[in-house]
Image (cartoon, rainbow, N blue to C red; front, side):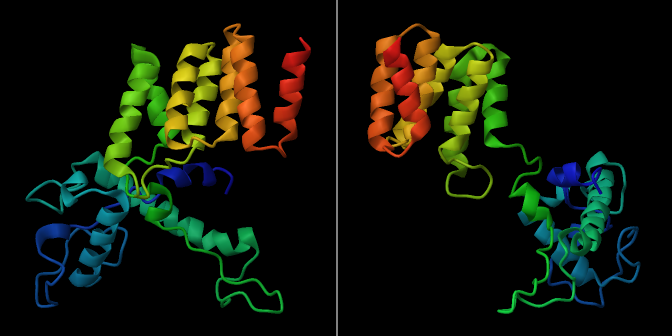
Length: 257
């Protein structure tokens, strides 16, 4: 099981196994020719059921039939994506079989009862990990990767803006304050405080009351030797979050220098 869980992220890589998947619309009747080359599901699975499941895969990964299937020959196994999809379906199903024992909740249990009895475990679906993306990479990883190509924070922020314009409000990427904070922290680890400052300043455009962002800015400014700038940012952070002990201690430490 320990070997399975890390791969859940690639889960349901979708589509699959079937055959004539999108050969006809989901309205196809049972009089239509049966599917061919079904390998994960029983050979006699009704066409309408296969197509309904394929449409769910499309929605879960934000793709179309041609992502896994050869156009005009849906029974073909020529595409690697279809081969992977079959294995992902089996992986997803095996996880759901083991899940009740792992979380200690019987599969047949109903909703959580008032007496404290556990309810049934939540089933893992393709959408659980893919969130509408064929390859479910986290936003911070995409932005960091864009910046690592040589363009630094300028390239990273260009990618961030592109994704935000396209996906904001959807489930694909997490545009909350923590994503750019993570990217900035990585820039600091790479000893690139200027890049970190650019990412954090962009974060403040969307989250002007983020005490964590101001505190991270202070660290980046200290790395550049800008003590006064760091104090100013920490004072702002302390005003925004007066209950934060780490911020107060950091401010006192810098002023004590």
